[in-house]
Amino acid sequence: MASSHLLLLTLLCGLFVYRCHGACAEVDSDTEAVAGKGFKLGCISCKRRSEVDGAATVEWYFRPKGEADFMRIYTYNEDGPTIEHDHFMDRVDWNGSKRSNDIQDASIYLLNVTFNDSGTYSCFFNRILFYENYEYNTVVSKVVRLTVVAKASRGTASIVSEVMMYVSIIGLQVWLLIEMIYCYRKIAAAGEEALREAANAEYLAIASESKDNCAGVQVGE
Image (cartoon, rainbow, N blue to C red):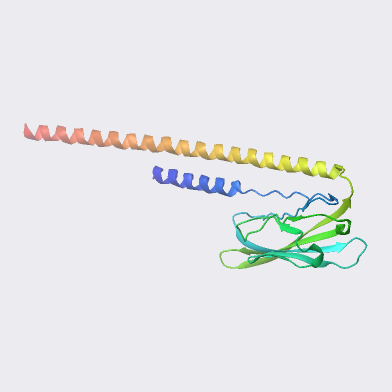
């Protein structure tokens, strides 16, 4: 019984470490790009329950500065990326989740930024969550208001965003370490209990054998 408990604890801890290894943290995108340079448009939407399998497709829309309507500029699904607008043709690369349909990072990289790229960008996650007996559809949207400048100037929002990103990463690592230590202590305690039970069983077996030997000697006499 103790060995079964030990195996179960080991499997649970291994599963926990596997799940936490891919921990997700939502970080706002930078909002200031430099003309002629590349720029990452960040868009991250973490699942609230990481243990639930899911799949998502992504759509990016753009509304130029001073305009009223959005235009679809980029899509990403199980078939890969598609640039939907001529203004961005050959200038957008996928910079999000790779080798998985369970997309949580839908960031894209904009090449050779121009002043005409200033405006509002919206990304949409069309997500399906697969539960045991049903599927749940949800749509999550994120907005990035981009300003294009001639020369880089690091703003307060960018600094705060970067600091929060590192704080989130460090916090997740500390939490993971604490949970790993807790699991390993549980495994060690279960192992010690298994050893004690094995020793007790061996002692009882020896005692029983000795008793049987004594009874045999008395019968012989």
